[in-house]
Amino acid sequence: MMLHKRVRRLSMFLAASAVLALSSPVFAQDVSESHLKAARAAVAAIHATDSFDNILPQAAAALESQLIQKNPDMQELIGKTVTEKALGMASRRADLEKEAALAYAKVFSEKELNDIAAFYNSDSGKKLLDSGPAVTRDLVKAADIWQNGVARDLAQQVGETLAAAAKAAAPAAPAPDTSAPADNSAPADNSAPADNSAPADDSQN
Image 1: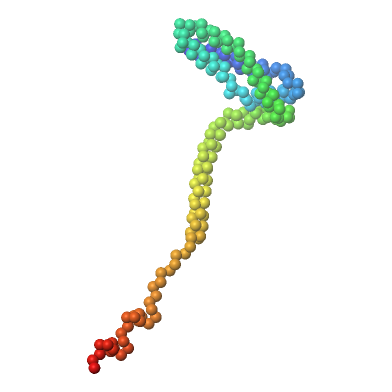
Image 2: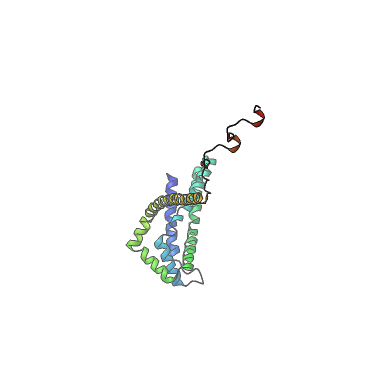
């Protein structure tokens, strides 16, 4: 419980550091002060760095837990030392805010950044930030269903086309010959003598 409170307190301190960073003076010579100001406003409006707020508190909590497991008899000193050192590093959060503002300033013009900040500070922009993740989840589900349907129908249609082409290219089987001789007579070598007489060498004198 005490660890949780210290981590929470550290998170609040980091948030305060971020606010100070957004109001800090110019930190890049190739970007104008007004441009950086617009970038800082846009970063704040879209909460671009909020997802990084817990990095240092989580690192501190993990380190404290690890050290206490190895040295349970030093729990109090470990907790106090980790919190103290982590709070001392919290000011480095401002470096991330500076880099974030610079990154946006390099990509977006001053006017574009002002437009971004104006929109995301509006009711519509705030709702987009709040509801956007839920909408994205629904969109991903819909896309999965659509993808499965398209893949299924594509495979079926291609298969049908290929089967039809293979059937058309196959040679036709020859028709069986069932015709009989024209006169339906037996072959000549099996025919009887024309006068039905016996062979000459068997005749009597």
